[in-house]
Amino acid sequence: GQLEKGGFPHFMLKEIFDQPDCISDCMRGRVNTDTCTVTLSAVSNYKEQLLRAGRFIIVACGTSWHAGLIGKQLIESFCRIPVEVEYASEFRYRNPVIHPDDVVIAISQSGETADTLAAIELAKSQGAFIYGICNVIGSSIARATDTGSCIHVGPEIGVASTKAFTGQVTVLTLLALALGREKGTLSEEEYHRIVKELVAVPEKMRTVLKQHLFIADFSKMFTYARNFIYLGRGYAFPIALEGALKLKEISYIHAEGYPAAEMKHGPIALIDAEMPVVIVATQSPLYEKVLSNIQEIKARKGRVVAVVTEGDTVIRNLADYSIELPATLECLNPLVASIPLQLLAYHIAVCRGMDVDQPRNLAKSVTVE
Ligand code: G6P
Image (cartoon, rainbow, N blue to C red; front, side, top):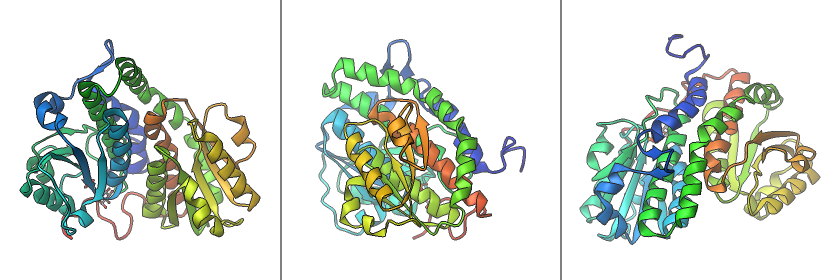
């Protein structure tokens, strides 16, 4: 009812706005803001199993799989352990190579996704150690795992996942930080610097949410769009995939997420005045390359929505709409940069008159194949 939505017209919008508090809840008791340290009970209790891992295999579906792609970059970069990210539905039927020293990370908001549960059972039967990242305590997946961490973001009602996604990314960040410190692959200085920046994320999310009305306003321009391309590189590539998924799910506009550098190998052929391109172009070592992608799109008359770092006047003058984000570390950028894309999908869907919380053909959790 109206009361549960806390004055918001849809659960999805409420859940988008809940994210700063959700991320604080997720970090509560785990991040010490005085010492800038992370304690994850699963890492403390299963140090041996986690530290001897030769490889991590992340299994998940949908939005949780996108969180997994970010987790791969975090774990590889902080812990120097190879990580594979698998769709649970493919993994379970592929006769995958699983070693007893593999650690499987299963990510699932509901904890009830049938394919993810089956992937866990398969990995378990081959001796892998299973770490779960779920929102629902006591769910089937939470019970099937050896250990894990709850994301603590509260019940998610909107079918399109928002706060669970940022919660999953937060837990993956905490896991990578805790393990990287244990392994010594992350210098003490870097570790503390990242934790300190992570603590600042909820406030930065609030700053992004203040652009809600600006995003609502220009979203109208895309009410009748038929297709969208979403681009990003590095940590921003999964953000592009997730942004495109949000749009598909609730507005029924066809959208494709692509790594920006791959544009030249196909999607550039699609660009004309009818093709809006959403591009994450925040500060990063690859900024200049993404900037030239924007120039290429504008040269072909594509409409550009750019997500940039505060004060970026170069892209502001180039893009049709530019959404400015507070600066953060590149590895934490997904937490901040995913929010404007959630809002964009939400407002376009509202302009199109769609049932945002209950999109056609989709279920909140897919407990059968
Ligand atoms: C369904 C939902 C998605 C979700 C996916 C995985 O498709 O509509 O929002 O990302 O399942 O769900 P899980 O609960 O395992 O994260």
